[in-house]
Picture 1 (cartoon, rainbow, N blue to C red):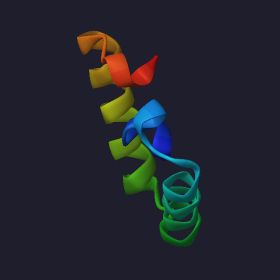
Picture 2: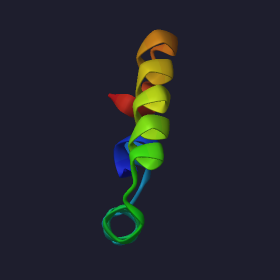
Picture 3: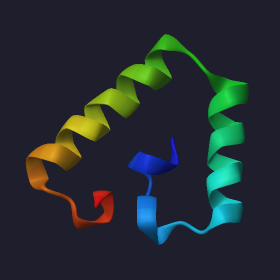
Picture 4: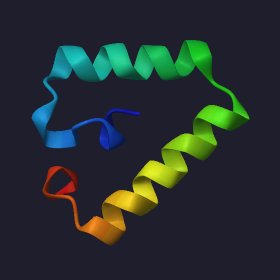
Length: 50
């Protein structure tokens, strides 16, 4: 989840929190939203995704 929420701008502690959130709240809808965000970042060539 942290890959679509800041990636290199997120520190390690925040990464753990985001991963825990994903683990505790997993759903098909959450995966769908993350997939859409990923596609948007690829299309927009988001610098945070490098």
